[in-house]
Length: 413
Ligand code: SF4
Ligand code: SF4
Image 1 (spheres, rainbow, N blue to C red):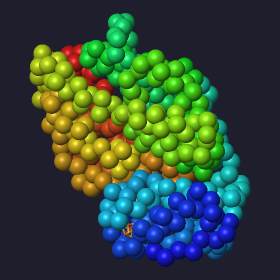
Image 2 (tube, rainbow, N blue to C red; image 1 turned 90 degrees about the vertical axis):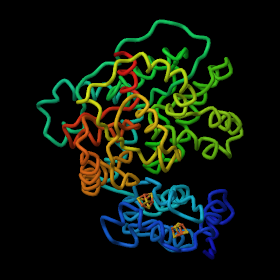
Image 3 (tube, protein in one colour; image 1 turned 45 degrees about the horizontal axis):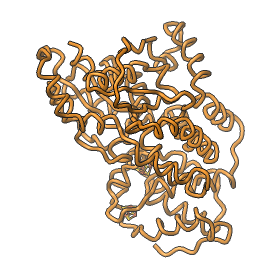
Image 4 (cartoon, rainbow, N blue to C red; image 1 turned 30 degrees about the horizontal axis):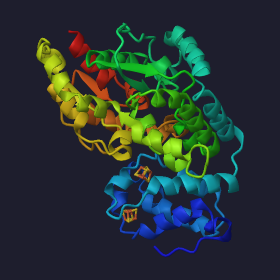
């Protein structure tokens, strides 16, 4: 696509990147067919090709309006369009650039501004969020239905192994996961322990930064990345093998740290090393498949009633990290029978803070996804991302679990 960027951005790093991305797009529209918001709303401007065109106009000097911002707000950043695009258009990067410019030119006000400021300040602060979550959990049954659906019952991280191992891996605790689903990292710790690996969490690490980036606070997101790198660095220098991500949403953000900090002379090199060291937990367990297989051999078979399982592959796993099929293989090896899930490439509507900011679209996507996941009458739904888990569980009585919790339970049987 021919582009003529305006002076305000042409000679910046963001401008050069946007131009390169825009030039790749040949306007074929293949991506539109796999875009969840286009499928629901039927408006070209609520699909990737339309949004690319809107961003191009803004970067070429057209004045954006509240309507421009709305079409960009409605994007889930699910990256399904990137998986479909035959030209390799890095849509999500262009969206980040476009959103930042539009945010400055069309400032928000009223309840929209208040809600975004609240989310930006509350979610990434795990202590504050954890206190609020505990309070919500203590009065959960008294909460109105819509709010109760967002507050999972109180749970624990389970038994903590006490052995030490020479092999160490750093796990990201994250921001909302420790208070909503502490057993995810608890289960990861136990599975790794059985494989002869010690999981450590770095004091001082926190939110990966995805929440703030998706709320158009790019500099605050870079601060989150810098703080995490500072917390992880001594452990990496001391020989930790890798950084384990138990939430695919966080993982797909951390692997972008090198890009986010490319212009920071103090962090660019460190960020590149962090990216190289980052692994999704499914990649870590797959690398230990022989040892896992030996452990599973000694486990009793799964009861028939628990065998049927639907796997929800989060967008951040399949489109962001491009990890496809390996969680499914691990679950099958553990004795589960995976039920078919139609339209598995489509987003469930969670998408970070999207379910709060765009509740109507989010609810429709949640209903569609749950219909697809439960069509095969599974005993449980497995996921790989904390946000999707909470969102899906809010709409169904079928238990929604992280897949590593299921592996942990198999090994504990
Ligand atoms: S599929 Fe790729 S090249 Fe085609 S319109 Fe979409 S982004 Fe552009
Ligand atoms: S990221 Fe998802 S919602 Fe946004 S344009 Fe691409 S496919 Fe559509």
